[in-house]
Length: 209
Image 1 (tube, rainbow, N blue to C red):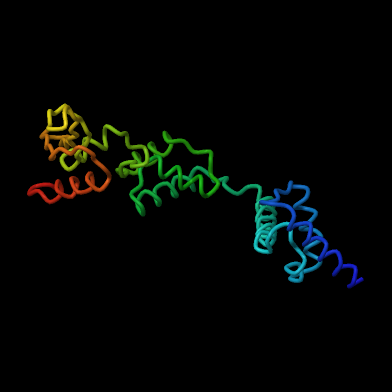
Image 2: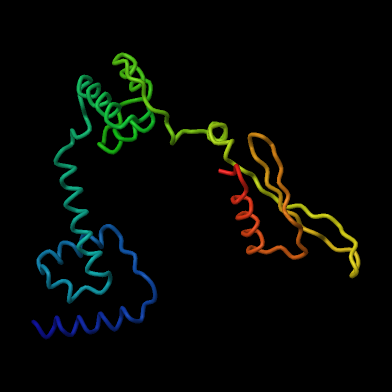
């Protein structure tokens, strides 16, 4: 029997070496391999070639995790009083806003709670939630940071030179709050190094945060 297993192992390795890339197994195929592999124990590391031993043992962990979830069908089901206490605890501990508080509930498997419910609970408890940075709009973000934000772009102008008419490229920076423009020295052939040096020059100017 040991010789049969040794032969099949060698044959399997040869066949696997002929197949390029990763082999994707179906759920039924994984279950079959898990069922057979359990009986072999750690020795499966010497036999398995269709996937790595690490992947196989991850399958085992995932299977145990799915079984533990099915054994607790009521996980995530909380009474209204428990939900209220949990909302208040998360808000006080983290300072999260409504959206992020609901996100924490999702991690716990609790889905039967809405943003309005969280808002009402915190309002009754007289707790002011922190801002929801995850739901922050682009406009709100720009309004908060416009003093230190600079936009940049390029434009070109025609210039008469000894070699004839040529394009000169200029990099311009614009402060989003004051609308102050800063123009760089022009270049005939701008590249990434040139652009990086102009950004460094901007940052070295007095008053630029």
